[in-house]
Image 1 (cartoon, rainbow, N blue to C red):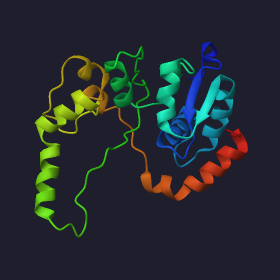
Image 2 (tube, one colour):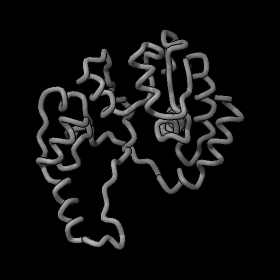
Image 3 (cartoon, one colour):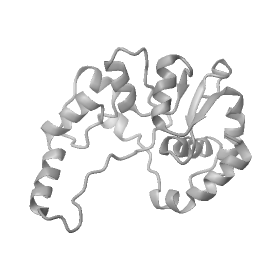
Length: 193
């Protein structure tokens, strides 16, 4: 993202969005910091300012920018890039050599549900091999079930298989929730985007 050839062609999301927050954490890590020490991340993000085409509020705006050429590169999900690719859009997803942050897609049994056993059956079905393969191949979500087998574009594009899964990085979601208002204020003050 910081390469000179990307000047004016990078799109990122604001830190209120997980994509924006994760690029700030990644920048902190690249500069010797961490999610717990974001100071180096803000310094590194200031270095990125000349390359920014825009900073968006909603992640869906990133896809629009990439599909129209308004931006060439940015932080987005493999699942969305995969769906864009399957629709014939000229996009490519790069799995970062430093690793990517694990952002879960949630499913849960609602407390007080009138049919908790049925909800548990549905949850178990969704985590089973057939459903995981369908979600991967049709919607671009890397399977959580290790027994799911992907082929073709899904295997190539998605976070799938030990080599990619082992490189996933955790985010401390509790820390994110506790500090997000201060991070957003600092982002707006220091980066003005």
